[in-house]
Amino acid sequence: MARDYYGILGVSKDASDQEIKRAYRKLARELHPDVNPSEDAQQKFGDVTTAYEVLSDPQKRKVVDLGGDPMDGGAGAAGGRGGDPFGGFGGLGDIMDAFFGAAAGGGRGRGPRSRVQPGSDALIRLRLTLEECATGIDKDIAVDTAVLCDLCRGAGMAEGGSVATCDTCGGQGEVQSVQRSFLGQVVTARPCPACQGLGEIITDPCRKCTGDGRVRARRTVTAKIPAGVGDGMRIRLSGQGEVGPGGGPAGDLYVEVDEEPNEVFERQGNELHCRLRIPMTSAALGASIPLETLIDGEVDIEIEPGTQPETEIVLTGKGMPRLRSSGRVDGRADLHVHVDVVVPTKLDDEQAELLRQLAKLRGEESSELAGSGAKQGGLFSKLRSKR
Image 1: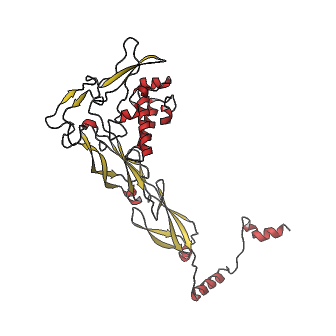
Image 2: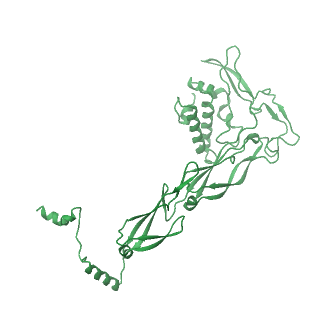
């Protein structure tokens, strides 16, 4: 039974090439072995890669739409991935290049591919504090990627080595087979298993990279994190991703921000919120209370006399920087201070007596329930009026 390549990528049968590409890149970033090392993720990564290779090729997609499976020509899903041990988001190798041939002759694929291929993008997550997100920071990051082989400098061969035409495919980079199907005679082509579709073989491969022109190594790159970044945002470092096969140009490195929660400030978009606990005396009399902000150091919060619990004081321009898509900071948001009035739970005799005297002076020796109709005599007055 033919595989459901559209279902694997989660797109409809009438999806455009751009929709197919976006769906593949999204799934590849989630399932890439560098991000998700589980066996299940690796299997799914192989499936979505194969699905993209099929649906991004017009001839292969036509076979799928007619109810066939272009991958039944002998290569299989594994055959398309075996030549690239580093994997990645890009640099896809073709598994089958041509499908339909005339009854009298047959068609040809696109011939041998270049040994030098563009590198893949890479993704790494970076944990940052709220302070680092607010002020921006230059962060050194250790990354494991494919880098240029320093022994052969990408040539893939030992000193004095050479390349020879592949005897299996005669330099074509592919082998073909003819099959009969309900469509008639179908010519299928797949990369040559001897030269991996290159059309040539290195007679004396480099002992360090075994002919690939690149090796995996750990290196340190510096990421310039702009002020105002937030959880889930990505910073693109051009040319810092995987070096391509044959020493091809490197892809990009994407740094995804993982923002740590802060004990004092809560972030809501670019707005900051915090709670300020003040004694009831300060709420009644008013006070100037220092507050250590995230960016601006210590500022004085002016508490007005008679401040009530849950009062909100807005400090304009003391929140997070507003980071635009262009990377430019456009002003700062606000800091919202939510006031908690603390009522003492323990009083000594002198303190209690003073409060009694205050209550007597203010006529607050007794209390009454008040509802929405308090101005009309209070809750009990309303109840009495109904008798």
